[in-house]
Length: 151
Image (cartoon, rainbow, N blue to C red; front, side):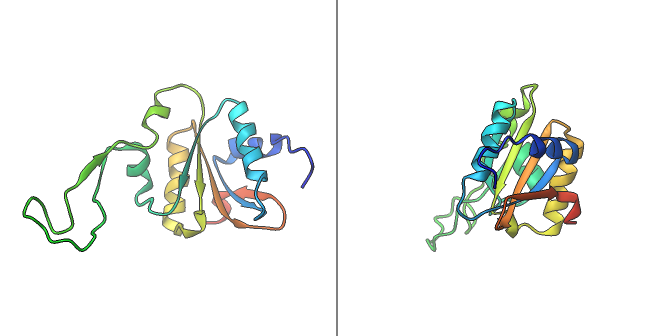
């Protein structure tokens, strides 16, 4: 990895492809530099874990329901045995109100299925301001490729 990472090639590839799969060294640091470079370029960045993402479109863009985890307690009759549904605001709701580009950085992307990766790619095609980076695992050197190549 070069001592100074400008991020220009990464940003150009991201803007062309819309979604990238990122493989970063396990020591860390390189992905933070890229994220800082993208924020300096005007991107509104949102970091999120891919674990528990569920339906990406509903989680990111729509008002959706979430049930609390079942802890083994008895129901007291107010709701179902699994708990009442809580309404949660969309994760990218506030970012979509602006006019600048939006970056969704997904950590632990190796747990996503092919269908979930395809739906993320479809979201970038439907919303042209949205760019997605999915960390797919470790590598000896920092490398990235368009997410469409994984499908």
